[in-house]
Length: 107
Image (cartoon, rainbow, N blue to C red; front, side, top):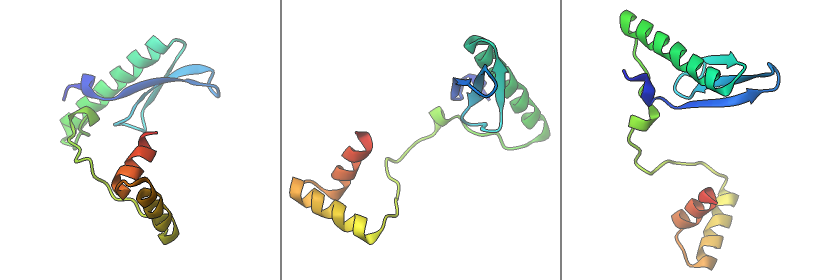
């Protein structure tokens, strides 16, 4: 597994007063460092070590988000009242309910 394909992020931790490196595919892992560059480098090395251990023990390894295929569809449950309200807004705007909700999510 190429650990370079995982999704990394660096943010500031006010609580720790350091930068924290994170990996979306491994939410339990983090790395604290004084600089953002060191936080990123640290979490990438940590992920590399964890993936290596997982490979050695035969554990399933998370796929990078960048390599996953997405259909563009997902279901959302809302109250009947909200469904009615959105359907009315869509009708008033002359668009489908799907188009209305997509535009609200994008905006």
